Every structure is written in structure tokens, then in C-alpha cells.
Image: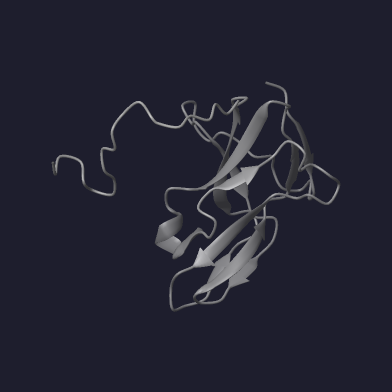
Length: 143
């Protein structure tokens, strides 16, 4: 799949798949971002990506992000195909859950992206679902 991408700072590399089997590509921080304790920081990812029509991009935390005391504040970032204007730089919305400041360094791999096709959903409203309720939130097997 060919994807158009614009780097803000050309001295930093494009997002890349770090291993042959990597499912997602790594984003890096364009600048140092200091995130105060129990606060949110917006980490610029140095790119504007034109998501192909019929696709969506997800921004996920890297697996070791929690070791730094960070998590994505919005869980998963969902980037639509029409978010690709000249000022639409992708960002990681990071929450610092520690009692200390955390600095994301310029050039640090901070998040990962995945571009996938999305289904074209047509809703079919019904009055009754086919299955009985099975429970949720840890109730499996309690009946």
C-alpha cells in the first residue's frame, strides 16, 4: 500500500517498522516534551499522513511506554482519512500517571501506528437479538 507522508522535520527519520515481523510502525517525538505529574502532554510525531480512502490509522502505545510512567490518554488514537491538512501533524496524547515529571526526548520512539482497511457498515436495526444475554465484565461461567 502506498501512503503519502509529509515530515515536519526532515532531520528525523520517517516512521519505520523496526523488525521484519513488526505489525506496526514506530513514531518518534519531534521535540522534547515535559509532562508534569498527573498531566497530559501532546507529543508531536513529526508527520502528516494521508490515510488511503477506505482505511483508518490507529495510534497505539508502545509496549514499554508504561515503564516511563506514560500511557495514551485517549487509549487509542483514531485517525480518519480526512485528517491530512498542512497543519494536521499527528500527535500522541500522553498521560503521565506518576508523581514525577516525565520528559519525552526528541527522536524517542513513543507510539506506534497501524493502517488498516475499514469496513463499510450498513446498520440493520432489529427489535430482538438472536441470542440471549450472556453477561459481561467477568460473569462468563457464573450461570
